[in-house]
Image (tube, rainbow, N blue to C red):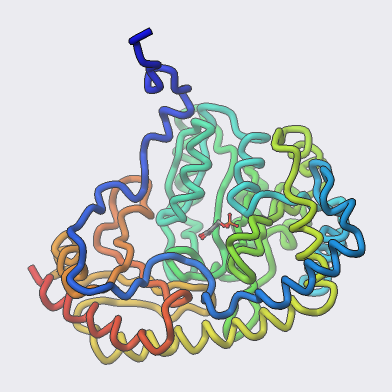
Length: 403
Ligand SMILES: Cc1ncc(COP(=O)(O)O)c(C=O)c1O
């Protein structure tokens, strides 16, 4: 046997559609000194509650190890779903119960489960432009037609959304779902205003469009709580909320959830084939949450991120106002910069590399290949003490990238 198996020829239509990578074309020479990274949207490494999780793990395994180490079913550990329901009921005056939740492999897995259950090839999926490329890829994997709607400082532009829906209708098609990151957007750092939320709920109801609100950053608000969820405003009808412990606790847990009316939860549990998420991890998190650890932790990390955001804003004010425009994020992990006309984005990628500071250029966040004149700086993962130096390097890179 000399002939090698042809993996490329064997790949499925959906697999082939995933050949696109948002991170393609970012191969630059190694920077001269170790770079300061303002890239990955992950929690502050020093904030990870390792000791608390070790203690919770020990208690869980000693008390209920047999259950923690067995299959747990497609909907996920009821104790954690109960806590999630209590938590959102308290914050949003809702009346959800564990029946309204399904635990998923992060919010990424939740979105995949929703798309598998509700999206057919050729359906129209409305997404924000910009959006989180990981989610766009997940939606793309179901082979829909993507229609992008612009986002400004107040979130998705609802007039543009209505026009997009009308255009889709005029082509004899129907928009099936809207995916929106309404709180502390990744990457746009925007929070959708209450007035726009109400309009979105009305518009989507009028056109029978399923709303998927991805709330990955919703708990990390600096000044005031975020406006009510689209789920709350819609009374649950036609709206889903995606949540995760990735940004508040740790990305490695891989536990998120979908919250929705019972038929949605039922559809997802029927349509998932991964045997559910880890009962062990879910029980450890539930132990952490039930003991009050989660709320205390979130309070602590909000202060960390607020300080980092303020340090980055101060440094930008000092070093970069000539070259970029930004708005102040009310929460989350990111600053979203619009480059002034004079900056050459390609050159900026090179000069920032030479100055040893890494950021993410705007392009990967736009499904239509636009967005080169934006940049995302992440403050969550960089040491607070390194922020002034990082922004000084970024400022030098901007100066050198003037066309
Ligand atoms: C908006 C958004 N949604 C979902 C995710 C994925 O999160 P998870 O780890 O819960 O799958 C991310 C991660 O960066 C994100 O920014």
